[in-house]
Image (cartoon, rainbow, N blue to C red; front, side, top):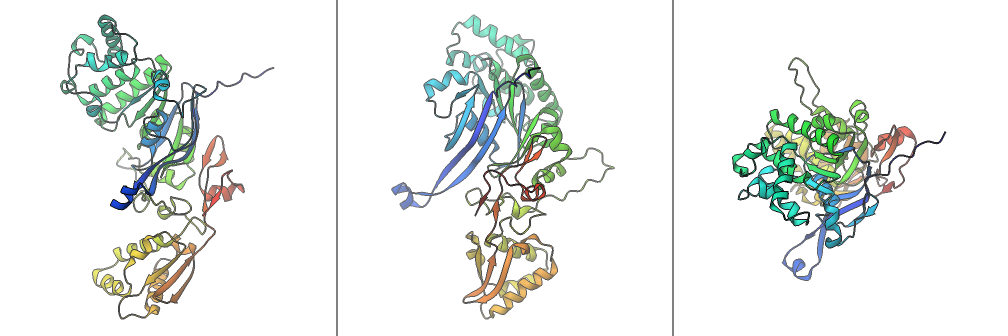
Amino acid sequence: MSQTKPDPPLLEVEDLRVHFALRGGVLQRFTGREHGSVKAVDGVSFALRRGEVLGVVGESGSGKTTLGRAILRTVPITAGRIRFDGTDITEMREKTLRPMRQRMQMVFQDPNASLNPAMELLAAIGHPLRIHGVTDDDDKVRATVSEALDRVGLSPVELFLHKYPGDLSGGQKQRAVIARAIILGPDLLVADEPVSMLDMSVRAKILELMIELKRDLGLTYVYVTHDLATAKFFCDTIAIMYLGRIVEYGPAEQIYADPKHPYTQSLLRAIPEPDPTKSVPRDLPRGEIPDAAQPPLGCSFHPRCPVAFEICGWESRDLRDLLERHWLAHPDDEFDRERRTVGDLAALDEPSLTATVPVGSGHPAQDVVDLLERIRADDPHEPTWTGIRDITPAAGGVRVEFRDDCVDPSLFDVGGGQQVACLLCRDGNKSKGPNDGRR
């Protein structure tokens, strides 16, 4: 018996990269020399079949919105490929791409910014029909807009056709934005935080509407969100993003039942528990998401990870964070005394596998060595210590050497369609990813 081949993906993204160049001072801008770059999207790959919903989840600054815009070619692509329904659209010129855009639309986060406050809904929602040359006939535009409004629940339509955005509630505005997105009959909708600006009571209704449209119109979604709770309600597949990369990917049910990456686990622990009688652990990641212009060495999550170990990528900036966390936890008088032992820590801000901790005025280098050893004794389980090879007095301060075998993990297959960019998973499965890199 022959097996039916699965349908080809509607959307394929392969090693997609979106880097934004940074400019330095006046001289660098004058000469056009780049001063580094922000890797907003840094090697993302996935395939999305027709009728599926992919949830792209992460904190602010993870690159998820840039990924959504790159899929629609509204931001410049640095490298990689995007195929839509078998057609490579990566380098399509605007004239050729425009007909494709009828099939790919976006729902933006803020409905207030998405609608022109001076345009009636009839004009605003019907505008795509005129722009793409579908029709210029006023009667056909009115009929098509009326159908779209009715489909998204803004009925009776006669009450809404001539309203302005200022006359609508937040939920009604987002329904109008969705009506404009579907009026051209697209196959793919990229929904960028479509419910985050809405009241809690309205969010479920908008998500239910999007599910109805998926069923009735055969839509496929890329659903961008920071909220794993709504993603669980809406998505078939989940992609967890952190600093421009996917760190966990797989079926939504499996990721919620058995999250592998420490970052995914922390996001799930951040979901509010509605039952006040239940105690839920809130051991969330320490610190903030790092600067994307200078991401951490090795695994980008390692500075915040509670289970990081020797080869995760420890470096000079981690040492500064360690010192500052130590001082924050101690009284002011102790901080003042210890802070005078150490000089200016700015030198630790440059990523390096060797660091010289400067000595404070009038103090010998051994005082800094003793301070570091006391901090280690206070918290021997701090993961940073696993990456430090040696601490020795040196000219101008104390030299700290980190391991030079750190690994930048790629996605490892852990079974069941689930992939994880975590060295714990690699070591646990005794396998390496195809693009395993070292720094």
